[in-house]
Amino acid sequence: MDQKPVTVPAIKAMKRLQRIGMLTAYDYPTAKIADAAGTDIILVGDSLGMVVLGYPDTLSVTVAEMVHHTRAVARATQRALVVGDMPYLSYHVSIEESVRNAGEFIRAGARAVKIEGGKPARIKAVEAILDAEIPVMGHIGLTPQSVNVVGGFRLQGKNAGDARRLIDEAIALDQAGCFSLVLECVPEELAALITERVSIPTIGIGAGPSCDGQVLVFHDLLGLYDGHTPKFVRRYANVGDDMRNAIARYLDDVRSGRFPDGTKESFHMSSTEELKKLYGDSVVVPMPKVN
Ligand code: KIV
Image 1 (cartoon, rainbow, N blue to C red):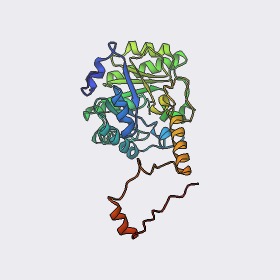
Image 2 (image 1 turned 90 degrees about the vertical axis):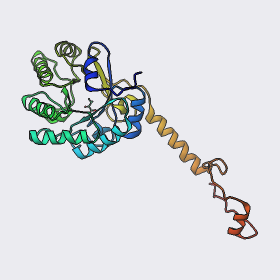
Image 3 (image 1 turned 120 degrees about the vertical axis):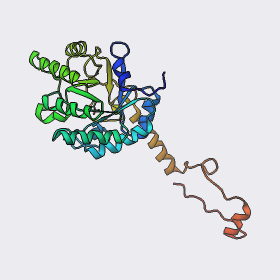
Image 4 (image 1 turned 45 degrees about the vertical axis):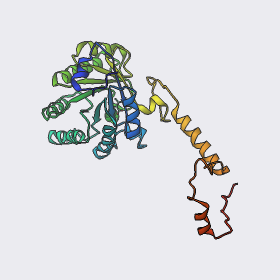
């Protein structure tokens, strides 16, 4: 695998040539693992709110929380393109605030930002952020920050009217200058049509195999999140079970006195002479209590 850092132009050039592998990450150790495995784009997603911070949805996540986690991910990443996900209300109030908030992600080490939605107000935000030299990834279909308006986390673009609106939004985001476009939870037929119509790579999550790339949430892929798992997730490991078992074995060893080993996992005084200075001539080393 080419170890050169993945750039925005490199991602654009991958359309129709090479499928893009994108994954979320939220902290230093997991970003390091995702990067070493060859992930092309690491998204510091606002799914952080649910899978890391324990919120019920993404709406409570703040710019400060996102920036804090972006900084950790950026420090861990050598190859992948790090994209910061702009949270709810960080690009909705005014153009000026949107640009300033996007800049906070760049200062934290992200090389692009992602925003949700494709209506005219979002297009204006995209253009202004791009004008500040910050690449933007679009995101349409199921946009979790709109959960209260659409009434739940459900498939979008099922009928011709909705599908046509999403195609128009995709074209508008492409024309505004987005470098890629996430399609979340839309019918495979619609994702294929949008992928065909736009000049930028589409990255699907619950959008079928025709997209130019795919993205999954780190905790879903690895079995680290025990909340609702959508149908489109493929679980490649059950790391949560492995962690639970390892911790249970550790606790068992602590309680039974098997951990730590008195030789291999402990330190000792430099000599018996030093011990004698401590305890006097009759050295009695206190023994740990074993249950
Ligand atoms: O926040 C997130 O993880 C996302 C991806 C699901 C695309 O937006």
